[in-house]
Amino acid sequence: MNERTMIGKLFAKAGETVSISGWVHVRRDQGKLVFFDFRDRSGLVQGVVLPGSEAMEAAKTVRQEDVITVTGKVNKRPEKNVQLGKANGDIELEVTGLEILNSADTPPFSLDDTSTIDENLRAEYRYLDLRSPRMQKNIRLRSEFVRRCRAFLFDKDFVEIETPLLTESTPEGSRDFVVPSRLHPGKFYALPQSPQQYKQLLMTAGFERYFQLARAVRDEDLRADRGFEHTQLDLEMSFVTQEEVMQTIESMITTVVEEMGYTLKAKPFPRVSYADAMKQYGADKFDMRTAEEKAAGVLAYAWVVDFPMFEKDDEGKWTFTHNPFSMPKPEHLESLMKGENIEHILAAQYDLVCNGFETGGGSIRAHKPEILEATYHVMGYRQDEVEERIGHMLKAFRFGTPPHGGIALGIERNIMNLTGETYLREVQAFPMTRSGQTAVMKAPKPLTDKQLGELGLSVKPRNDA
Image (cartoon, rainbow, N blue to C red; front, side, top):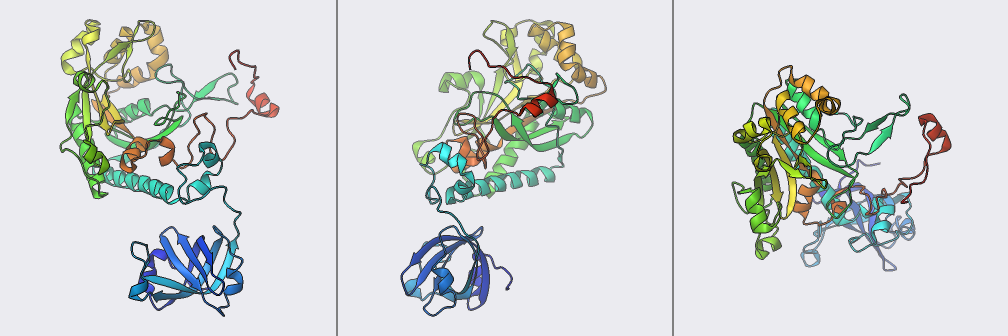
């Protein structure tokens, strides 16, 4: 058997006999001739089985989406027969041998364009949905974006470090997804909403520049651009100012997206205060593009800065706007420490917005225990409650934690901007449905009695179920 040749490399093999492997994209039986479009990860090529070919018997039985290996001669097309605008349109594979490696059932929907197919049907057959050209493009573009970001950060002396998936449940932020412990009956882990505390501990550990592609899991209401699970490019830097963090990220984004062929509306990215954003746009995420720029796929990035550090919750109590680990702006530190002028304290926080989406958010962090304690005291926590919730952070900060700050960039949100997609599910490989059901597999579902027994759990109906 000849060594496999990728379809995208066939033009360089004109006149040679090659072997390709992939899928049957299209089959057209014209009686004496059978035409195919064959597909692999590198592209498409037309193949033809001529009368009298030993491959004709197999060609008559091949179906769309069958997995095949094909042997054939790469022929250049006469100029008049070149298929303009079609990949490999100037060559054709004269098929001399065809082997079916695995036959395929008829797909439940056309794989040419799955955007109008029912969401639940797409989720059930997501592995087929992902074969469509649009989904192949989106997922591969996502991979390229991540690869380029990684390369940029490695070049800037960042270290990639993974943080735990099983961690402690905390009452701040969104609802946690919790995991019962078999070894510690009646106790629970939580899946991370973000690596926030771990990355600050890594700064305490002296790594100075950290990043990871972190999975974040939050039990919050689902919508077009938000799911239970997402991936974020999470990073933290020691001995930096807010401006230095923002410049690092702006340089990375500019470098990556321009190398990928995209056009930016403005460089450097505009800086808009939270107050001005609310006044001008009515929201802290906004789209600055003209209609023409939208049609051209221009990317309009901007920074939103000077956020209020606190806001009132539904019970009229002070709570944080981003997270409780943020530093106030230097000129507001004294007010925080005294617990005064709470409504006027601004945080050293910054969001990166693009084309109407919030694509990232971060801050300079509190790195001294007394500053973090002051934030919790403003929110009404007693000292014993502070120790219960973040005592491990206060303890760490007493061992010489440097000033630090960072950001988390939502991978899905960034890829939505690059692709123009408006739904999160179009840039994830296996997204959940709007009802919170997993793709392909059937979760959530009940545990068996044996599993519940091992965990020391019993399940009772919820009153509102």
